[in-house]
Figure 1 (spheres, one colour):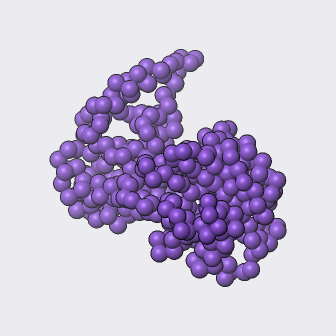
Figure 2 (tube, one colour):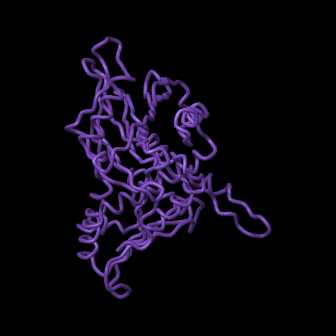
Figure 3 (cartoon, one colour):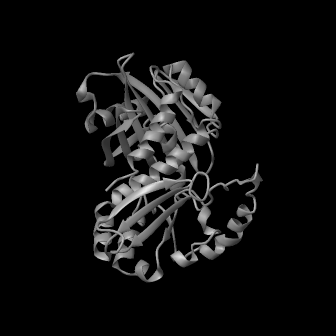
Length: 349
């Protein structure tokens, strides 16, 4: 039960904040750190092959970072110890292996069972062997589910707390709507380009946005996208000397198609470096087609933080990419897309 005891006093205090209204108990807000997962599974099974299969899924590294960083903080508790104090964790996996109840292995999720803003992924199975095989085969689904839930929570926060500077630049230059983290308060403008940053001496986070003409389906391939990125960054993000400018480490960058607000997009995730300098770090971007103006809009978050772990910084920037609304899109589409993305995961088998 790693770290469970350390959190008990804090969680108990939060529980007492629950109150009654009109005779009904008001559920507390879900607690715990972002990307923290509590597994409800008996200790013997947790240490056995079936438990190790689940642990190995949750313990995988985040892609696209310069050093290994785990996807989640993992805690475990036996069902008999899963009490009211622990009910308010934000992310929970409940494991139930019972051949008298189930004939196969399946998973589904429920929300707000014990606390507001909570998600519980329930994995029911008929045998330990079936459970271990299923979890191993569906490991990416489990990772994607909890990652998306955390991104959704961040997007909810960004609806009301965001950088007005970044919002205004997106409106002025691209006629787009964008809500990004409020700490982005410094900026630079260029032709069909802007860059905002917190300009922090440690843990610098940045967001940039740029566009170029859409030239058909061939626009969306790795070579084309990274060539455009390098040319835009060379022109707009120079170093302290003339031969210094931002470039992509193509050997450590992957692209894949994704769906954003029901529409095709391309995600690029990898590493950048400052040519002829020692700076570098991770980045993630979305390339999307603005059909009204026949152009590709690219929004990218990147981090320079050599002195610290980058997981939290990158995930905060990545969440803001989903808040971009192209000129033809409406604010309601963000909320609708987030809800539908949750429901896609509900009955994965």
